[in-house]
Length: 314
Image (cartoon, rainbow, N blue to C red; front, side):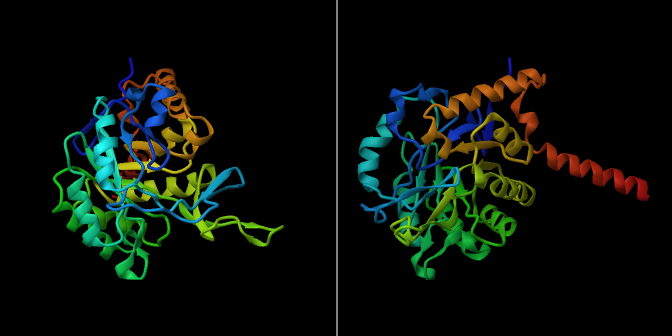
């Protein structure tokens, strides 16, 4: 038997595979047993009702996907009345993804969703901060630290900070999130991108630009997960381009404790189960008793090399 269980800041998961926010809903309960997942991660919600971006909102991009959904939301009240009760029937932990336009909105929503049945809160600090000319909270270490410190005071639940790849100081932002009170890091959100229809000579998305996800994102997000795992001491949850068990193994070797699967579920609704089964089969074939033995082995290998080099130098 292989032990697939992992620990994310005190939250015990039966396995490291979970959905990425925005790619999972209660409708999948009619497709497979949701109890098999390590955690349930909801679509990002906002405090009030939100319509989202103009259509078209999704387009293909070289085997991957561009989306500009705009976080449509029915609001926190509807979410607490209808969605949270649905997930209470499962033992699998529920992680609620939240977004806000200001620090005050974030804090109020964080407090509002800290209810029975919610195990952790994923804080989408990749979203624009209207008080900073639309720059995402996670663009800079200073704003990342400030928002996480504010949210830590608003809820006693574990907080997972979802970072953006659209910045140049990823390790510094990761450390700032940890220092501000984040219990885990989700690495990462989509990359801001664009596609043009050469026949209409117009952008393919109604909002002009959108987030790139899918297999092409994996090498970038994997690099980010590795950098964040080295920079911070809190768990990293890898996210970006995961569609096979091998992808999961790479992320965990790079330092991730768990992963989130997104675009692959749009292509194959049972992709997460296929990935999970493949991961278990690989561990059995490699005679590895616990999936936790994979976490950070690349980082550990570097440290061993450094230690050996120092010994030789002495």
